Amino acid sequence: MIILLTVAIAPSLALFSYFYLRDEFAEEPSKLLFQCFVYGAVMTFPILFIQYVFEAERVFQYLFTKSVLFPSMLEEFFKWLVLLIAVYRHIDFEDPYDGILYGASVSLGFATVENILYLLEFGLQTAFIRAFLPVSSHALFGVVMGYYLGRAKFSEGKSSRKWLGVALFGSLLLHLAYNAILYSNSVWSYSVIPFMLFLWWFGLRKVKQAHQLSLSHYHDNSSLLP
Image (cartoon, rainbow, N blue to C red; front, side, top):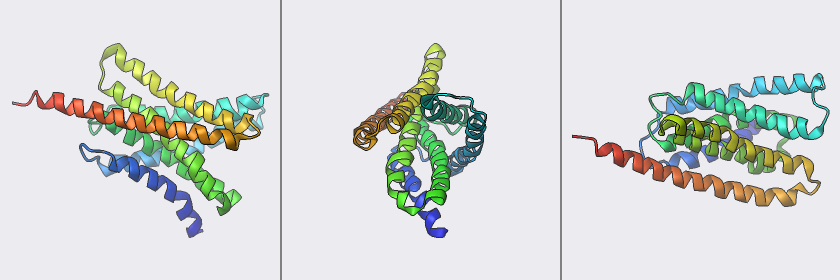
């Protein structure tokens, strides 16, 4: 059991450590990051419950809606809602790169619990593929959502609202594409690898852009100092 938990949690810790160590600006409070991780972990259960109820009641007749559209929308909306309520107006959200850390933390909290439950059911032989696909994809969805959340936080007026919408729909479109590849392609293993390479490229591009935005943010603020 201890080995299984270690294997299930290790990919999330490795991914989060990578994004955390990329932060070149203010050190983030570990308490808020931990809270984000816990929020992500806890929200796994209402999401699974809602999915169970909808499946038991046979609300959706089509496989695409049940396996691709609905889970993608449900998971990304819950992540976005948690970030909006618990993080967006928090005093420790200090620069655009913070959005990436908080977004990744919430997503990895969800991915960790999902991974534990999956490995408990299907065994350790699936651990490697789970680390490469669902866990890392959730982390990168969170990076993309967090990047645009950071844009919204440090924009004004209509621009801020626009970026909040992009934070939700940007990660949702990526999640939809990922699920569509897995569930609608009989040779998904050949399609998902190029998609994951694209997702990593896109996510790391957002990391670089967030660094540039944070650098500009601190430069602008320093010019206001006496």
